[in-house]
Image 1 (cartoon, each protein chain N blue to C red):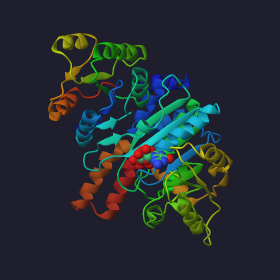
Image 2 (cartoon, rainbow over the protein chains, first blue to last red):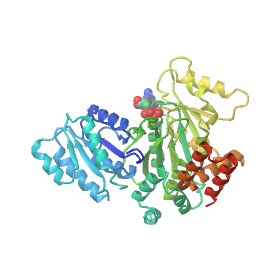
Image 3 (cartoon, rainbow over the protein chains, first blue to last red):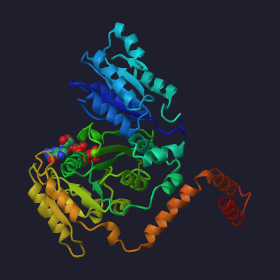
Image 4 (cartoon, chains in turn orange, blue):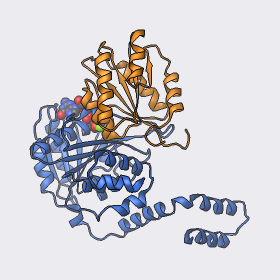
Length: 136
Length: 299
Ligand SMILES: Nc1nc2c(ncn2[C@@H]2O[C@H](COP(=O)(O)OP(=O)(O)OP(=O)(O)O)[C@@H](O)[C@H]2O)c(=O)[nH]1
Ligand SMILES: [Mg+2]
């Protein structure tokens, strides 16, 4: 991706969960891999995440949830992205997602789910391979 | 495709604004976008917030935006963070310190990566300012990177430059060494809730009383305690506009000419490089190379 403009990815921590260590580690790794990482802060509501993605013209949205609210929050965000005209934005989900829920999240349009132990290199490789969704 | 985007922009489609800003940030389609905008709207105030890393620029910009929203003024924030010179990557975290009002169309926050080096702002911010102004925002706030370098470009693009300083341990006035005072119109003693704010204020006033200094407002603000914020806005609002102040200056014109040239001949960078290579290999002497260059540019 040498001559490619850097991908812009919003990494958001959604819900009331106060730990953002995981997000911070991923943020660092992506920055060091040449991505532009937009970090909107803790305790994001689905509404503010969607607004951030829209105003920042992000290529990707990474949502991190630890609170077990994924089956309500993720489909809601997907729906709101669509309604906001942001169908082209790729969505990643990070966190502890039960095996049984994975196909359900993929079915609502999530591009990929990364569990807690995922090597950072795998996330980077995935994003590089996918490239830009907005400026293909 | 650009035409469609520009039409949507004129119709105040926020997604079109966001996409056009991306193009400009990448240095794409600059000339066409510039041409599509109406002449610079001199009435929209542009405020630059500068100061060292961690001095509280983002926090204060967020608070200032809330003061402005309460007055019914819409605000666009262009927040710059540094880009790594090694990887080109960037962590754009300024908006994490700013308010989120997802339902409020009167607040727009855009994170921008500034190239490393002496630049305090992202490239082509001047054009981005014109775009958000034309989109209809009432006030534009630019947060510079916290690199602590007095970048005169900031003075050129903003009507009012606000320098933030904070009480520090010791007498180490880093920002003074970096020449930041020279570009400021307003100095904010930020984090005034911390001990040492008064002492810092008198230090700053003393510096400013030295012969040759311009008249600069100094005020104490705490974003944490929400004090001094409305005073700050009225001070900023009462500053004379740079555009009405600027003496016609050859340097400014030259810089703009340089920029226009760079944009106009971007597509010919390859051919120019080719001529330079041939000259380096002594296939052309310097006169021939100059002729070739003129030829490429005149095309
Ligand atoms: N005590 C005190 N701390 C503050 C105040 N405003 C901001 N801070 C703290 O200062 C730190 C830095 O704030 P930021 O707003 O991120 O500073 P910045 O200048 O934008 O930093 P960079 O963008 O990295 O250059 C944070 O920990 C804030 O909580 C204040 O008024 N008082
Ligand atoms: Mg900041």
